[in-house]
Amino acid sequence: MLSTNQNKRHIILIGYRGTGKSTIGSLLKKKLGLPLFDSDREIEKTEKRSIPEIFKESGEDKFRQLEEKCILNLCSTINPIVISTGGGAVLSAKNREILKDKGFVFLLSADEKTIYDRISNDSNRPSLTDLSLKDEIRSVLEFRMPLYKECMDFEISTIKKSPEEICNSILDQLNNYLPALKKNRK
Ligand code: S3P
Image (cartoon, rainbow, N blue to C red; front, side, top):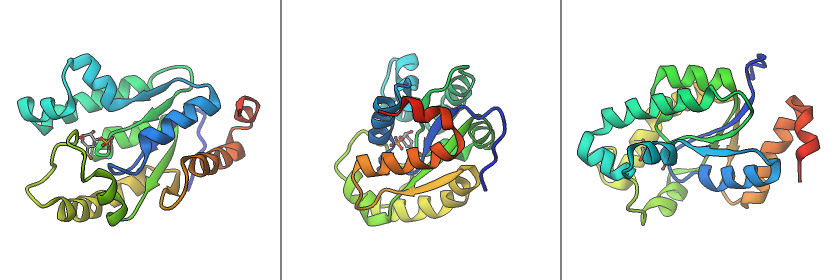
């Protein structure tokens, strides 16, 4: 159930790897004329190293600390922005709380096979477990799904839909709650 508190001002994308957060974030930025921030890219900029390097050199726990700090900073921005989060951002209870408090949170979802097809050739995503990629997706998704659901305001399936269609579904949902956005829609 959507909570419409007065603090909500950002448009926030959550969801597993390969569900289209970056693509949809870029399109939302274009359509709404709002700045886009991708938490992974922000962490890489501050750390001056890539996500796989951070995982390898400092471990996942360190990455999660950096991610928490980054999400807090982004959510504290006064003016509305689009925030694309890393797939594991919802692991932190603090993140879940602040994301939901400060923004309209869209869970982008896809089935395991679609996710596998989208990410299996990407070396920029460090393993999260010792499992094969297929098993990892199944097991991590199962674990995270309740956390995504706890944090989201709306769920948008990204299967067999163009980025344009996905983006329009998001904007349609938003227009119900933020009439001012209508004016900026391109
Ligand atoms: C992660 C997802 C990645 C990135 C890091 C960890 C995860 O972001 O934050 O590799 O735990 O699912 P994307 O969802 O943008 O790939």
